[in-house]
Image (tube, rainbow, N blue to C red):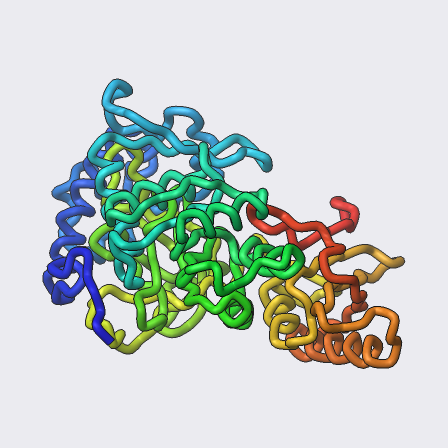
Length: 437
């Protein structure tokens, strides 16, 4: 395969040189961090009072972890490390579960972020001949503007369509010859279903690639999207605390997500002991950003679960690769004492071709026990008035889920298009158990 590189010098930099670069940038980042009240207090007693106290990358482990709760307590300006008049943009979380987390950018920060997103896009084989339809939320959410700027840097024609209104999305695809889209995996599945409903001829759409992110999803879901839409789907990883998209991305080899180590230092820890795990073992991803001066964040606990690949990538890039995000430590459900991740249930459903694209997990209390109900739509070729194949499908799904999570679920089958569809991040879980239990 003819791999292409946005910045070959950095993408294929020898590990020794890459680590020397990281050390230099870590010192710079620590210098900015020490200007903030939070890190000045947090680093007191660690022996790191100025950038020169960081002698090697191992010294990073002397720095305590930073959490989302820390960022919320610092709202609005507690993590700002440069003069207010040097800030030209902010992004923030929704704040629906607490105070927002706010990230500030200088002009140089935005330029660096754009460069990393452009690197991601270009690594999938895109170029200035492509038409890029950005079907993700704009505004305070980082995904929309981040990919928009990256696409423009690559030279693609960018259509800022935003999410929702699938009829309009189809019209834009047909009118302007869209070749690349960016959306959540759940919305991509919804797009395919609506395409069938509206009788859209797939051959009239030039779509070749999709960037999918903003929510965890399984490899079976990726394959289903690729088969249904006849496109290549590339995994994307980012989070607003680390700029947003552009932290890690798949190349054309689709052999894990290259985490751009000239902009980030990645660690994977056991979320219970907080100790590093061995390469290849799953744990919680911890990130330190090296490419932003306005809001430096050191050793941020992402809560995302992943693992490092151990072998090289065929593309020749030297940056370490992450396995797809399998879930979050704070997404885990405890059902009658058993730890269950929603991604396990999704993987089981998507492995059954007769199952539909949309599902909902409901957890309730039934007496003293937890009751798990999985509601899933069926595929378009299943007849809902034929009881025998429906019962057989329901039992197959139940057994497949139980084999994955050991919990015996109740399975409900629903007609295609009958379960709620989210145009942003999918809301897949309804935990209706009393909060005080």
